[in-house]
Length: 604
Image (cartoon, rainbow, N blue to C red; front, side, top):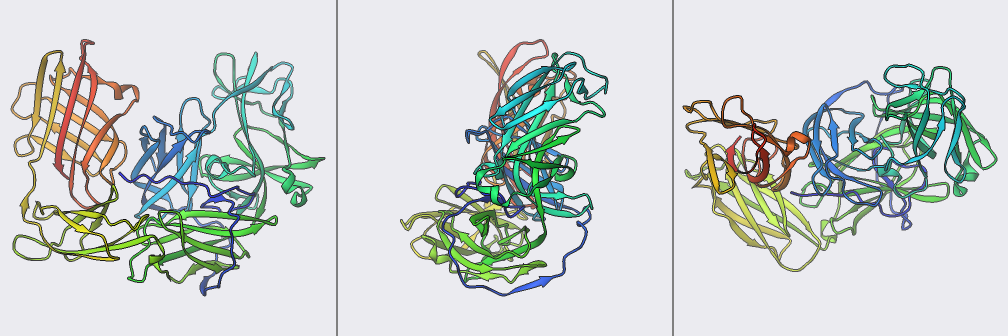
C-alpha cells in the first residue's frame, strides 16, 4: 500500500495558502510569469455542494510518531488508523468547498482538517494531534486562573461553569486542560483544526492570519464535561510573537472553530495590551486570534511532455508575508491537478517536485484579484533523477483488446495500478535513482475473469514499451477459509462462492453464509478503508457465528482493529479481486479464548 506523509519544508510563518499545508521555504527564487484565465469570484461563500471522493492520510502525535487506533470520520464514514497512523476512507460524500475530516483519540484534543475536495479522486491529509494535558484547576465558587506558560493564561470568574450535558450549575473543583499553538511553529499547519478560513460577522468567507491559538477543555471532579455558564466569560491572554509585533493591529477579531462546518467563525475581539493580546470568550473550543484577508480560488494542472498527468506530485506556492518567505503545498490528483484558496493580490512562485524532493519545475504566477484557473503547465519530467514511462497493450484469449481491466506495475517496492483504455495503458513513474531496475507488470481482464503471466521489463530508458500482453490465464479460485484453532484442534469453515452465499460489496464488507448446514455458519468482515494498493489494512471481524445465535467475540469488539495482509485489490470503482489473510484471537460464547485464521480471494 502506498503511504504518503505530508512533510514540512521549513519554518512556518503566519499567513498561508489556506487549503494547503503551510511552511516556510528560505530558497524562494524569482522566475518567469505565465498567463492565466481569470474567472469572476462569488461575493458570498459558495453554497454547500457535496461531491464523492476518497480521503487518506496519516495521524501523528507531537513527537511525529504515528497514532494507532484513532477514529477518523469523513462524510459520515469512519476508519481506524493502523500501526503506522494511516487511514483510508473511500466514496465519502464531502462538502466540495470544505471537505472535513475529524479525528478522535483518548489522551488528545480532537483533530481535524478542512480542504477543497478533488471530486472522484484521492485526497491526502496530514493531522498532528495535540496531547490533552491538565495544566491546572480552580474552585468553581471562587474562580481562578491557570497558566500554560509565560504570558499565556486563562482567567475564570466565580461560579463560571456548568455541566455541558445537563446545563446545571457545577459545584466543585474544575480541571483545566489546555494547549497553545504558536503561529510561527513549523507544526501549525498539521496541528490546527480545519484550515486558515473563517466566516466573518457578515457571513463572508475570508482568509485568516493567526497571531496565536488556544484550545481549552473543562472537566469536573468526576470527569464530567463542563462549559462556561450562561452570562459568564473567561479571559484569554496570549503573547504576540516578536517577529509579528510590527504587523499586529491594536485590536483583532477572535474566531472559534465550528466543528459542524469545518470552518472558523468570528465571535468577539481581543485588544493589544503591551506585548499581549487579551480577549474574552463565552464558551470553549479552539480559539484563534486572527486578522482576516480576502481569498480567491486557485487551480492548476501539470503534465509531462508526453501528455501524462503529474499524478500524486508535490506542488508548492511560495510568497512573502511580514518580509518572510512562506510556502504552502498540496499533492496533485489523478489528473495532475491541485486546487485551493489563496490570498488575493499576492505574487507567488510555483514549484513542482519529484517524489525524491527535488524541484523539477518553477514559475512565477499572480497576483490574482479574482478566482483563477491556470492553463495546463507542461514541464520537463526528465529533470527528475529518472522518469520512466511504461506502456503496453493487453489482449484477451480471442486476440481482442481488453475493454475492462487494469495492470499493476510493481517498481521500486511500490505498486502503481493503471486502468486499461481500449486495451492500452501508459504510466509515468518518477524514480529517485538512475540505477537500472525492473518493473513487474501484472495484468487483469475483469470481464473475462482472466489474468496474464507476469511480465518483467527493464527500466534503463525513459520510455519502456512492454509490448503486447495476452491475458488468457485462469483466475485463481474464489474462496473464504476461516479456521478456528482451539489448542490442538482446528476446525475449517470453508465458504465457496459457487455453492454458498459469498460476496464482496462495494462498501468493502465480505459476507459469507454456509448453505445446507444446520445452524447456518456465517461470517462478516469489514474493511475500515478501501484498499487502494496491496499492503496492510485495518479490518474488523464484525461477526463469526458457527452455530445459530452463538457468535464469537474478537478483539475488534473492543474497538481494536485486526491488521490484514492484502495481496490483491480492485482498482478504482471497477470490479476486481480482493485477496488477503489475517489472524486474530476470539472468545467463544462460553468465554473460552481461541485463535482464528482467515484467508480469502473474491471477485467484487
